[in-house]
Amino acid sequence: MKRVILAFIICYFIILAIYGLGHLISLEEKELKEIPTPTQLQTPIPTPTPTPVQTPSDICIPCSNNYWRYDFVCALRCALRPKEIDLISNFAEELKGADIEESTWNILNWEKKWIKYEFIEPTDIKVKRTDHSFRIVGSVPLYHTPSETCYNKRGNCGDYAILTAALLLKMGYKPYVLVVAFEDGEFHAATAVEIKGEFFVLDQIPPIMDLPTYYNHWAYYADNRHIIDNITVYEVRITEGEVNVTEMGTFDISMYLDRIITQEDLQRIQEDIVALIEKEYPIELDYNLKDYDEDWYLPWGYTEGRSWKITLKNCADYYNPKAHKHYIKYIFDRLMNYENWKDSKKYGMFLKDFSNSNRFWLKVEADKSDLIFTFNLARQIYGY
Image 1 (tube, rainbow, N blue to C red):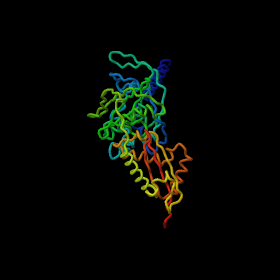
Image 2: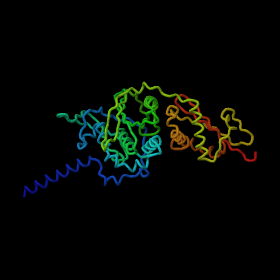
Image 3: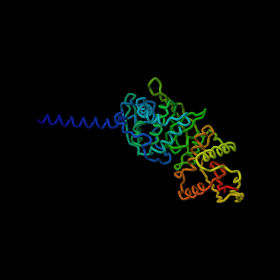
Image 4: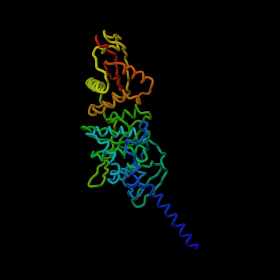
């Protein structure tokens, strides 16, 4: 009788151990049926935040061993296997645009709206190296597969980079994953793609940024500022049903000169924003209002004149003509969507003045890294 009881207890603990290990392994396909579609997720996200990323090793743990979750490059090789990417095919299909530029903006807009950034304190873990086995020392974060990040609706910066790369791979594009080393010793992860011969970084929220702007973003614009020391680039490709992660090298991003926005750029931005406004609202561009913000004089036959000056911080630096089409949509949304106004009362006043007007003029100017939009508004009295 004692032997039966002892055997029962042993079996019980074996079942618990198997369940505990299985809980860490990638979600099975039947569980993923419960993953909500992009239109069902409802969690906002804060500004991009760096997560410590462990310096990668040349030797990776087999994907059958869950210790791969504690090394970022090993996580790339295991979390981006074709069978893992296939599990998010519904997301990739819905987010894929007409070209790579549209697809990247779709991905960032979706991640901003539905995936929540969550920093989890790194796990203190040590794994001894035995005959070329992997060795992890110290506190490191835990990484997840793309489907797990979707299912959890949250993740750290490494999870974002993995998810973004997976979506791009499933769409048929060629992503790069960046390990960003800051001068203060912290690390961060992001994704990059090549658009019209230039590399653009995708980092959790819009806009996409060229490399010099990405340096400025962290150095001057981010809430949690850092100086980038260097960036290590990993090329991620699917070849003959296998994922290949290749280290392309490390470079100093501060060596790249940033592009200065030109008067031609500003004119192009003004024309396309005006076109969107006239398309979306019952209001027309009117040259007669061009100087109203300076002389405060309304021409005969106009009434209810108003002038609004709106500054979009850092948006002159974010601009790159190679991403113009979707940058314009981004700027238009920043101007006309109340969620992007910090002061809802001022937005209400602007919207009231805008709605009461049927004529307008728009000026677009650059002040260092900022864009300034001046709206001259009025109502033309018909019959004059």
